Length: 121
Image (cartoon, rainbow, N blue to C red; front, top):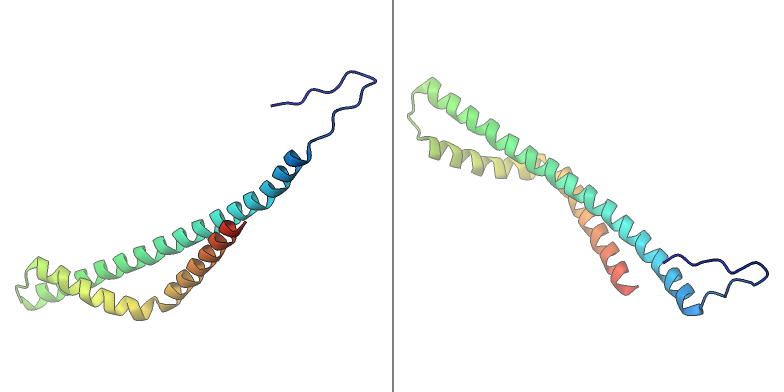
């Protein structure tokens, strides 16, 4: 709601202290909310990179296992090939993508800290 100015010669009515206190309280909360949104978007982006990297690793392992199957005529079923690639992918990604997982854990801590700060205010 827009406040109209007083006619000439009469001063504007003063802003009530309650409204000023509400505006002062709202500003830090919106700033924290914006910071929290930025932290969450960074966390989502890191999670997407991690998931894509793991899926790419599993797909690559599946192709390698299928290639070995074709070269040596082992006749391994496709489901077993994918299951083996999945198991190997989980084990290898735990080692290969350790730094990315650590960054994700740090971002989770940042988001949790921001959320706690917003709750206390």
